[in-house]
Image 1 (tube, rainbow, N blue to C red):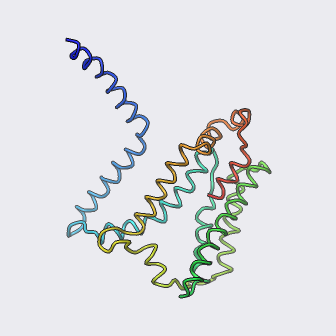
Image 2: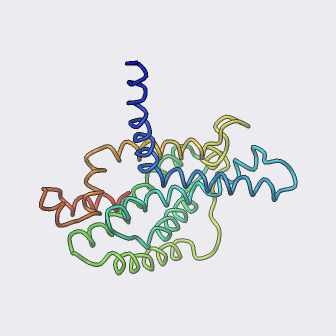
Image 3: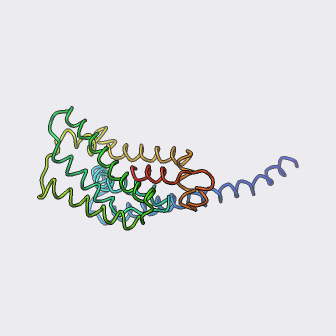
Length: 232
């Protein structure tokens, strides 16, 4: 009798835990559902079966957009907006395409320079919004045109050079026919996001996005947080 009562008593808690899990992760689950529907529809629309090549190609095409969207998500969660994200990506791309050579040391240096340039561009937006109290839409719309203009000055016509060895490391297969490199990069990005979400910075991001004044009253430095988010 006790065991039955104990089992019966645990069922509502299990249902409550399931409801809590579904409610907390509904956005992720909905995204996975949409992805599964799109994948199934694509498989039906193609003449052959969905192969590893198709998966790797789709992942490589959408991987850049996914990483860009992940970076902008930090800004949106903090209650801001960034219209210059695409322009920053374009600026970094033309720098890489202009400066890269076949020398491995050059590739390492250009990669570091690309990260620095992207971080500086984001920090400019963050500084203008956080410390000068300018509207994010106005700031990022202005810097969008500035960064696009800088990209056109560097590379006014389509061109540039990216060594195949360099592109294969980022867009090829980490394990041929088994694991695309882009999938690993996206997995690392998800792991980083999971760590940030559970950290003090993640809590500050949500607090600032919910109510900036209340976050300031609790001792959270909204200015420095915004500037860090701009770098991301």
